[in-house]
Length: 195
Image (cartoon, rainbow, N blue to C red; front, side, top):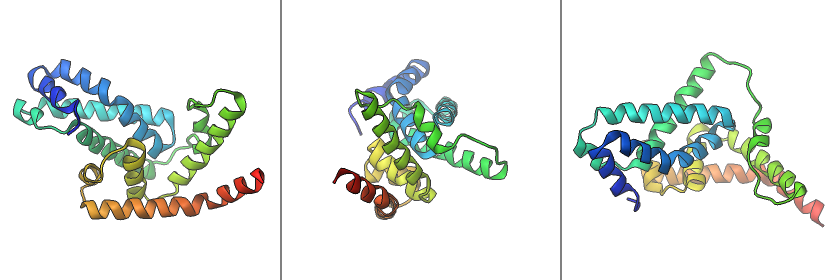
């Protein structure tokens, strides 16, 4: 359990509204980062993040104080966010709509580079990575994002995915291997350009 979880769980147990405000403050960026990486769309990630926190609040209202104290908030929220995303994907498959392309959504991400060239390079790299992530199977994509973007342990990812740690390690390994294969042409092109 991380250092913020215990006091946060105690706040949730004693004052749900105050504790939930703190829960959102502490974990909103992590939930948003996960949803942004699995959807590839900032607006969709915002909407799904709101839905995830709404579901979390509704669930917490039905929990006893003891159950709130025993909560592992980050893993619990990521499970909710993953389920909200999966439900969204199922709905989209049933009722497809024209949406923003993954490549177009990258333009709204803040770049870390100080100058225009660095920003263009970063956005291009991000677009390539997001497109490659979008091509991974659902389970592998979620496992890779939770492990390497969100920074969850294998055990936490296993809790979110509802499977064993060994299965998560295999999903992450296969996902990273597939990403390497998908990104190899880009890396080779970059090597050619820098020679």
